[in-house]
Length: 228
Image (cartoon, rainbow, N blue to C red; front, side, top):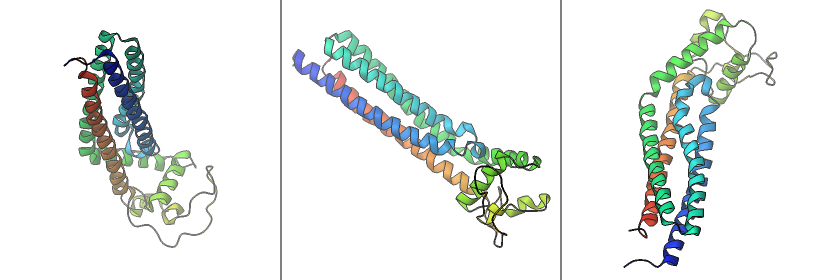
């Protein structure tokens, strides 16, 4: 039985409301996960962030499509509603592709992070003067209670280990003398810890993308039913 025009209109408006709500949630979660990966981009590489960036962009586009759908539903132009539905289908496909992409990056992240961290570590050691790179390593050491990439032996060629390897970091963002002598070194390296950290957040990105695509498939069915 065909739905009345008012019933069809309210169903589509309901769809767009749910769609907009999912976009807001998606924006918040993808933005948070992107930030958590972005702050360690020098150690894990920017490639790890790309699935989260795509997810954030999809959230913004989804908000736009929800607004278009709301406008077209109010005007009762069925062809416009169908076009909006096709755009939603495209978003769902891209979100599922983002899930697959995040899982592929998740599966290959160990080699990428180890290579990136080692290159960045060597670059920092070559800079003999105090720099923002050494401050980043200090903060990483203190945050994760680790030292170097594989352990304190990474600093053997330098002849000294930074005091951040026992929890003593610089006094502020500008490199300054350390506050005390280091007596107990962190023995674990930062490589494995950053690897686990990145894998955990990438898995969350993948799960958010999958959940968003499944949720929007359900609301898409609500959008299509009145048309058929």
